[in-house]
Amino acid sequence: MWNKEQFLDFAAPYFKKGKAWDFVKISRNLHFDGERRMIWFDEVLDTWMGPCRGSGWIAIEGDQLKIKQYVLSMTVPNDKIDGVLQAIGAQRRKRG
Image (cartoon, rainbow, N blue to C red):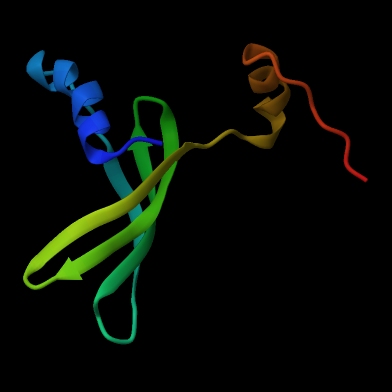
């Protein structure tokens, strides 16, 4: 987890090179709270990693929208999960 400054420190070199992220929205769902002070969302994105999912929430502060939390997750097809677990040095956990 990063705060805003940590994320900007991480991202700065990529933007300085002119090479950053190019994520294209495939679909997005927006949900407003009853008082329209908050939006929560989920989205599917086309990225250099393949399809990814994003989710989070945005505060509506006056006429500004401020992202308060964003989670990006890389999707892994079920038939590829064993290869991913092997690549990251993890083992499948037994349930029950």
